[in-house]
Image 1 (cartoon, rainbow, N blue to C red):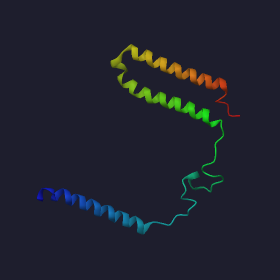
Image 2: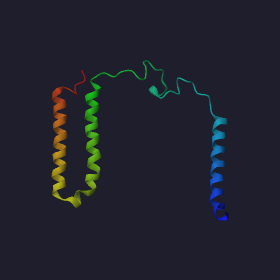
Image 3: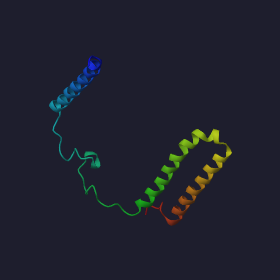
Image 4: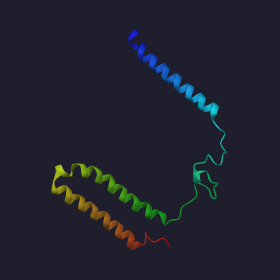
Length: 116
């Protein structure tokens, strides 16, 4: 039991410190205004419901963003191993970018990037 005494004392002091910090935060906290504590609109008075529907033109823009986000998701690990993989990896990445470019060109042609 004496071998665990050091670990138990560290655990006890950590729990005591956390309890003291929690109590200090409770004692010094200011009661917030319920409207200003909302995450919607960064504390400004809401003019519409937070779960209101978005216009349909935002959905293609979201999909284009996700396409470029997935592109970056694949390009970071690729950049790490491209020197080991050789020219085949470069060709594969250009094919991947070509498919993404074709998707963006299609979205552009369909008018997904027009705002009005």
